[in-house]
Length: 257
Length: 274
Image (cartoon, rainbow over all chains, first blue to last red; front, side):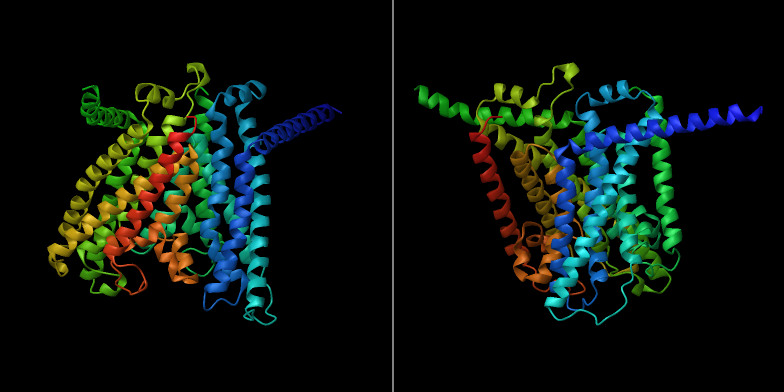
């Protein structure tokens, strides 16, 4: 008899928290939908994915497998989720949107959680559509070239890994943008690491495997590293996200907007 | 008489505009960041490269690395300098169009700039000169420093590079950075925001450039801006890019692209509202 009211109270509290998170997420989704740049990035990523898949499938002399082709385009496609993650935060600071946002949702942890959830929904939808479009485009091109591998079993794991990687690398960008409160520095930082520093270093030092994109890349290219595997690579990427995310949460909670 | 005086005043106007733009560039935090990327980035990568080359030679396995020459270790770090040049070219323009915080009036620098210097071509020319001077200054520090560091670390372990070709490649790298910065500036004039030029140019200055993917489809892709100039500083020890344009031709093609972009952006900038 004595424990029952407390349990009800706890349930009610949890339900209130869930409702709040759902409402904040919905508000953040409305904001994201209102940004032309987000819509443009999402559509651009899908179109680029299909275009690159056709270009690679029609040119690479040894391409016989659609999954193979698509995993090679992830290198470029990751720009999409990175941009979505950075824009989701940076647009708050372009004007005084952040003041309005914090007036409506003063709980800063709740706000970050809602933002992250909204990002995850948009980025997952974008990444799934992009990878599926890429697979379809590559397969059609290979069939048109008479190069499609004959009745090989379709392994969905590299494609699922590519989607996971795309979403996760964008979370890192979101965390970095929250920490830096701006558009250009986190965007340039992320792009330089994944497109310039990582390919440069990987040729000359084996320690490059600890970079977030190299480690996370094992999600869709599972046999390219002697030390890390798909699982440990994901853990390394998640560690990068956790470190940057903790710093971002601590900074966002303690400083003036 | 008045005509003569006006003609004499014009170079002074340009000179003053250049000085003004240099001061504006120097006070932008983003241009300090760009210079840091252009100077410290290549140096850091060169140090890493040079040490892995030295370790590979010392352990008797030079096959572990793609090359052993100090110059190769230095020039393979040059893409980071290109990133610095891109950031500089973009922010010099995008900072003009970024609105201030509404608390501070929400104004844009470009209105003050055009009120002070109403001749738009003078503004654009002054900005281009300021960017070129900055990039060349960064290159003059970075490239010799990288070559020196690589030579210092690898030392007598590898065959020394010839001075002439190395100097030519250093000049080529400086030219590549400068032309890329000018293209970044010109494209940003068209977009008035830094995001699109940054993404396009960083992707295409990387080792995994989209142009390089397109070269598999058609060799015409070697005439694209970033691919045309690649031989200005990049040797091709593995013979992967046999159809790439020779340094002189490639440099000229790239310069033509940069001039073309500048011409289009001048035409647009002189005609539209700020």
